[in-house]
Image 1 (cartoon, rainbow, N blue to C red):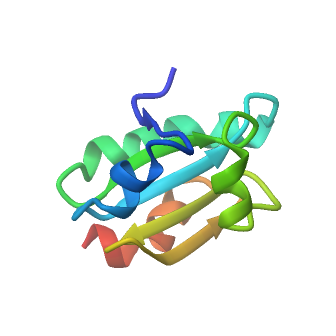
Image 2: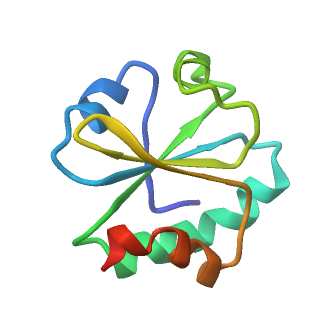
Length: 108
């Protein structure tokens, strides 16, 4: 199981939007193979860069309101939030070097 904190429609405001941290939300579902493939990579990034970025997970099947609000039409989808705003979107499972390249501005 992932080390990332699970967030819900109900906790999203406090856990993500009101946070002063840079937060990456992994929008995923249990039936999604690519979601399961990218999960350990996100755990590694979260662990290695815990001082720069926090990773949380939102199950789109259990939390449709946030998935709809952020127009999640393909998963895995990762959105980086800073100050309550989406500042980066990454779609699809990628190897760790590619994800780190996508997130370089937040990991530096």
